[in-house]
Length: 315
Image 1 (cartoon, rainbow, N blue to C red):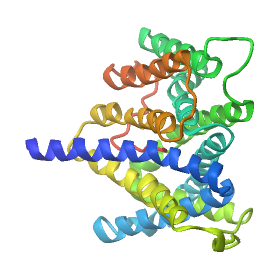
Image 2: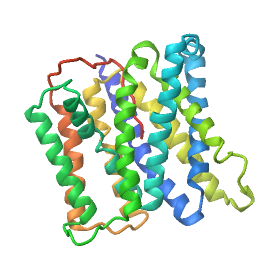
Image 3: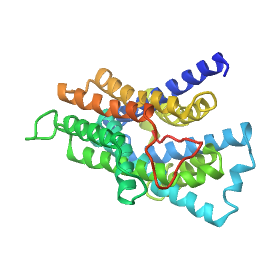
């Protein structure tokens, strides 16, 4: 492969993963300093980013796919379920965890999803326990313990609602990852995720219509943060991640994707001045190590293959 193409791929995935992580921290800024409603932010984030991704698919790729996904009743139903339980589930629980705690912990708890997937496949007897799985689950449990307790079992270092929403975010991401596989075998990932975002945003509009917000209180700074979260932290982050797969292997892309929790932690601690204890850094290192280990190690042996050539990220 051309060296310049590979360099471009590295630049794309590094930029995309960093935007995802920083987008979570910027969302925390909006919640805490400007009292932006979680429901409203998730609604407009999904609707606008989803429509932009579909526009990219329509004008730059195979435009026929944008509407072809609705012509089959089975795939249409799968897409609706994916949009509601997968996309909306991941986005809402992640943002709620940030709102109650901080972006660093929310992002790291979301990265419990790989261990949850392993446990789920073991319970369904679709995989056999390997040394790789044991290392992954062990690093996850150690990371969670130190991250949430800072080494003290007497009290949690993170508010309980943030932990609950964060764990639910991991569960939602596990569902999102597993359920998307059949759809991604049939349609381009921009089409699948674009429509899933639109479906999730449309559904949440019934709870918090996007037009029911007092924009008169919004400063130029608020608009700037909103643009970053929607455009850079969602739409461009996903698009760059997908584009990087043209010149990088899924292993390389997922490895560099671990910059998402790292960028979320660093910006939360440095920019927002969130306190982070020594043992919480140990927990952070454990979860990031787990992500790197998964990226570099071989796939576990399974009784039922679930491979796909495409890849998606929920960040």
